[in-house]
Length: 216
Image (cartoon, rainbow, N blue to C red; front, side, top):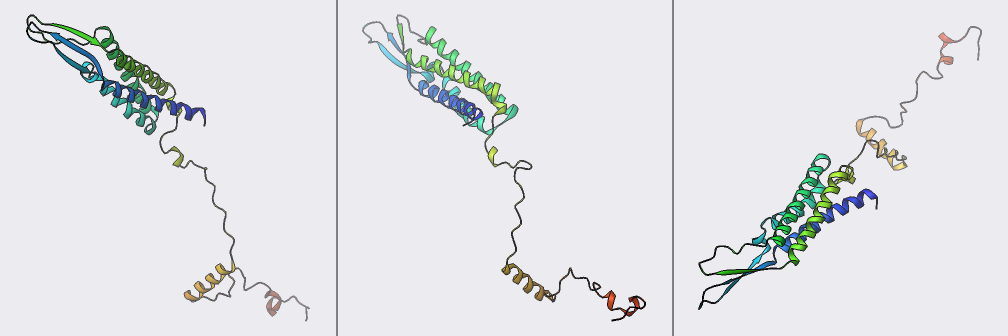
């Protein structure tokens, strides 16, 4: 495999893997909120998924999966634009992950006398952060090197001079017989040779052209 195709494969795999990690992390529980209420009311808890805490994570995951196909389908400036979109998606993923790790989700509105405790599951935001780094690296690779990569269906394109004309097939007895039958169908004599010159060799037999004093 050439270096160009290895780069293309790495970029496509990076986009697809980053998108899969983002979607997987977005569907998991990122935080649990426990609200303590005044007695005799019991505390209540709620599990918050990544789609609730950071709604842009799932959207970025879908964009990255679509970009993995787009990198193969487009070329030139279009491919560079796809790479820029992948980088932007990676930045959004990283921002969402860091914000969740640093500040965590808000507990929402509380009634008088209620208190809330938020327990953040750091594993899933960290996984999202890994996806962000992977997406940014793949996007930069596409932007910098993508113009040199082949596109989908490149091998099916015919370049000028790529294919030489096929050599003529040698004529067989069967071909000559078919030509004779076709000549008969047209009303021609197949024994006539169109290359024969009816005047060839006849000059010596014409008395008008015979040299003086020449006899046979």
